[in-house]
Length: 407
View (tube, rainbow, N blue to C red):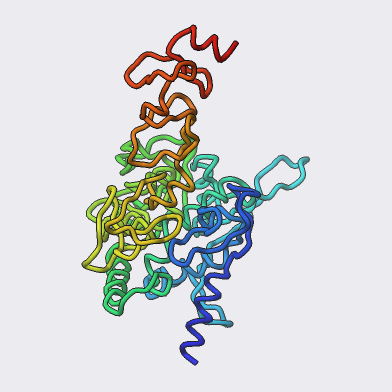
């Protein structure tokens, strides 16, 4: 029964999003089909987030697991149906202040800072770049979902989402997850700098919202070093210490410089990371499966790290150790697949140009750098190292030869 249950779990995981249209490739993709370990579509090689898949419930479960057994359990709830912790997300609808004779207008945010003061929540979002504001149905909401998938890979925290980990690797991963939950993981707090000053002084009076945006005394953004404005919200990070603050748009990962999704951060040695790049600072990441490597044995090639079993052809998955391969779009491809899918054709002999062969290119046309191919179309003179004229796929050594063919 246990084996059947595990097989069912794997099947359901690979059925998720099956057949969804690719938003990038359109009709060129037959529909989403998850590669069994690459975390991309078998058909078009795009990721799950580039397909028309509703990710909300899956993303909420992922973040719920991230916050499980931490001080942030108040942001999650366990569903009665399966007991899986799910992130609450804090979607809010806010009525905007408008003149009396204008119909009421409301705005729904997929996420807003979980603060009691609605002014702070709205003002925080207003201080973000317009294209990153998580208003439902906008590019800002799409940006948030993309960053949720990018910054917080589920395979960085859940061994069951990884490809064939050994028991030793599972144990090391569990230790890694426990470490970042204890030492690095945090969620930003939004407060007015003047209110934080009162808290640090030992007491908090009534909430006061400044007018005019005058600089606050002695406070500057930890990221841009520009002064904070009185009456404007700032982001604080407990792990960093409440003596540091950030403008809402400056609360970003030190590596990718992207806005930290839902203010979820990882603090390490004085630097702020998103989940992905915190992981990269701790462990090598496989260029094939995108997972962190917990094995002592792995290979390095083309400036990337690889599980030994994952240094494979991007097209056919054959192992490339000791084999000839070509890098295409930063992905290794075996020679047969290169010849079939990527090799250019010689404009003279019409055969594919092998990756190790010398060639001459002119615009969109290519030739083998051989006397029998790179030659004058009029007199067959070899043009290697010679001056030539090119007209589409024709080569000429002189105007006279050109007139013979093009007349």
